Length: 143
Image (cartoon, rainbow, N blue to C red):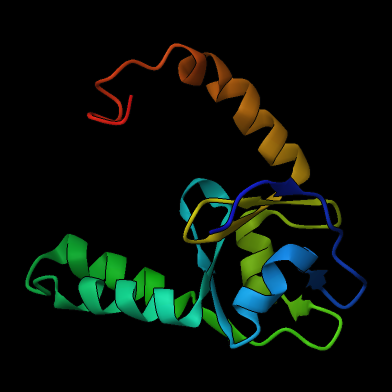
């Protein structure tokens, strides 16, 4: 389970060092893809394959499904961390997420999200009050 927030930096080669506590779970390979809100999603390979099967089963006769499938799969990069836990982030993925140097990696249970640190701070500022005031309708049956 991925939890917490960490603040690694991209190096000059566009590599990000994964937080040590997540490396074992990602050692077998990972998939980096464009996430919502202009962050990147990092899935363990097995988790991504399960999700990809579900997405691929959606009716491709629906234009919205085709667009989502194309965007998701074309924007995905497979990586394996090196011995120091670093992964290269493709230039197109860095551009999409606005990653330049300071990053925030957050755990989101089944995936990691990589954010530009300033964008993550703005996101938190914009959504903090909504989280503090969330009512049962947001996640029925959770609280």
